[in-house]
Structures are given as structure tokens and as C-alpha cells.
Image (cartoon, rainbow, N blue to C red; front, top):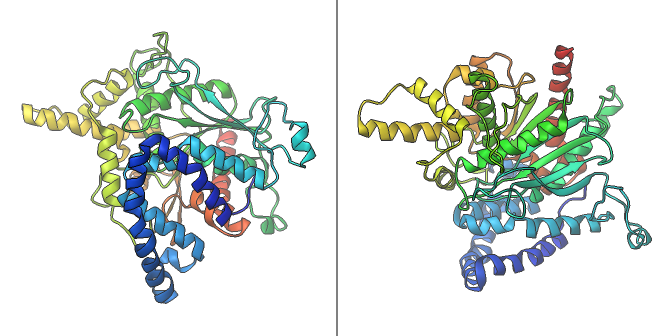
Length: 493
């Protein structure tokens, strides 16, 4: 299901959804303070930037990304760039939270003729039918992860691990499952903000991954009949820090593997910080395999305290603008991208938090592997630095340099990296790809889009004009994913 581009009316509705949540979550004084800080930018800074960078500057001299985008997209990107650099994360988190994103998504569906509530029977109530509203092509619902533990150690439920579940037809078993982890610097974001993107992804898996104008000249690729996708709603910073998010990610992945069963391909995917968690998940699983099936290393505790066995490796991974190394001197601001390197490093330090009391056994196993690689420290000072470095290496995948673990971590279908050439994280993505190719040749595929920015497939779906431009990134990653899984299935036979 693909809805139309974001309109000015949509922006107004988004503000109406956002305002009461700002008042509820940060209070009246906090909201007024935020407005007072933002007003000078909206009244003076934004018009000045638009005039100087998008009107006064000749197109050929503009930043690469700004040479092709329309005015509305430029307006939004300038605002996002300001927010990422200057607004505190707890305020940004409200913008992407479920209480704001879900009502806005339902408004967008209603505006495009869809009943914004789904049911397992794929029907709409009589009132909706009388208004000629259609049922969405995909079923979606909030779903708790069975037996999961929340960051405070309690069982799943109202405050436990949960996520957004999407499936083409809930009455039939899936023939492919996707496990998605959202971005947001570990401090912002929710699966519901990505709802339109994920619905379009599932829809493309059913249909051809190629643009309509190319279907006449090429044989239509076989799609899946009933894809299922689960996007985890992991706990954000500051409510929890590393490795709580990893524990929740592992629990969600186990749930998806159980849902898939035998013979159904499993895809893991994520954008930005979500892609970081995907890479950490792959290292986690590889560590289990390193220590053998049934060994205590790699076991995850359930809410009942029962140990569970090792996890199977996913069949393929898709990483959108992966945040490979959390803190890096290679991260520099660009004139095109909306990310801010200083803010990224701040979010990274907040995510790492205190790491003195990590009880998870798989986490300890990863620390053991890192110690073996780094060597034993010889003094209390070096011991403290050594422990800090190990923690950073586990949370920041590019800092983990054990080639044996990486070789086992790479899915049999490989890892697909998709990112923009103009984004802040591009240098570290290129470096990780080069290292993984050195460890296991042919294990990665790369789609580096010229002149594009961070998480551009997601950005374009919301902000680009034509259907072709809005789906360009999704079609490319879905096409790569289908091809990799097709090759994997042929090898398995």
C-alpha cells in the first residue's frame, strides 16, 4: 500500500497530533521553552537558509542533494537538520513516538480512502463501507513478544518488549519473515513512524520489485505471497542503555525465527542505529555458534528464568545507512546531510551508558572474544581502558575486529548496504564493507546512491514527488533482497 506524498494539510494535522503530546510528555513550561528556542530559527534562520542555499545560489553550485530536490523537501530537510543539531533528544523523541505517529498514519490512510483500522478477517465495518473506504492491503497490529523481559526485568506486557507486526494475510502462514529495527540514535523513533515505509515494503515483496515502465521489457520477478514483518519497539535512551536494547533485539529475533519455522527465509534489516543493532545481533549469534550448541554462552533468560538454546543465523541482512562505528573521527558534517556529527557522538555516549553490571551471558561471551583479540591488560589503568574499549567494540560493530567471529556472523545470503554518498556516515560504511570483503569475499553488496543523504529510501518515501521517485530506494533494496534470497535458496537445494 502506497499513500500519496506528504501535503501541507498533512503537516497541519501532524502539528495537531504533536501539540498535546508535547504538553503531556514535556509539560507546559517545557513546550513553551521549546517554542521560544525554535521561533528565531523559523522566523529568521530558516528563511535565510532557504534564500541563500536554495534560491540565491545557482543550482550547479548548491550542495549535491539540494540540486535536485523541490522546495518543500528543502524546507523539511533544513528543519530536520536544525532539530538534529539543537533540539534535545527527549523532545525529538516525542515527534516520532507512537502517540503522534500512529494517529498521523491513520489520518493519512483515511485521506487516501483506506479504513485506518485493520482486522484479522480483512473486513471493514458497515459505516466504512458506506463511505467507500477500502481495507488496507496489509494487516498491521501491535504485538507483544512472548516471554520477553522489559528493561526493569519484568515480564512482557504493558511495559515489556513489543513491536509492530505487519502481514499480508493474517489467516495464512508467512512465506518470508522480515525483522526490522528502526533508527533514531537509540534515543528517538518508533516502529509506528515507519508504518507507511514498512507497508510499502511488504507490498513490494508481493509484487515486482521493478518500476512499472521497466516491466514491459523484463520478465516479472516472482514475488512472495504472504510476507510478514515485525518491527521491534525497543527501549530508548535514557530509559535504558546498552546492552538492554540488544537483549530485547535478541528476544524479538527469536520470536520471528519461531514464527518462520523451517524452510521460510528470514531477513534482518534496519536503518541507522537500527542497522547498528542488526550488526550486533549478527555478532551475538556468531558467538553462540563459536561456543557450540547447548553451551551456556549465548543463552537468553526468559521471564520465567528458563534458559533457551542458540539462535539460527538469518539468511540475509539489509542495512540502510548503517551507523557502523558509533564514535569516529571520520564522521564529518556535510552540506547535504541533515545529520550532525557532534549530536551523533553525544547519542553514542548516552547509549553506551554505564557498563559495570552486564549479566547477559552472550554479552560476556562477546567480551571474552574481544579480550582474546586485544590481549590481557597489565595495569589497573590499562584494565579500565581495556574494559571500556571492549564495551565500545561490542556496541559499535566496526570496533569489533575478530575476523573469525565476523566470518561466522555474515549471513549465507550476504549483507546488502544501501546509503547515500553525501551522508555523514558514508566513510565508515565504506570502511566496514572493505573489511568484510577482506574477511569473506563476495559477502556484501553495496548501493551507494550519488548525491543522496542519510536513510534516503525512508526520506524519499515521505518527501519525493512522483511514485517512481518515492519508491526508488525501496525497489532497489527489495530487488537486491529478492535476488540474494533466490541465490541462497538455489544453493540450499
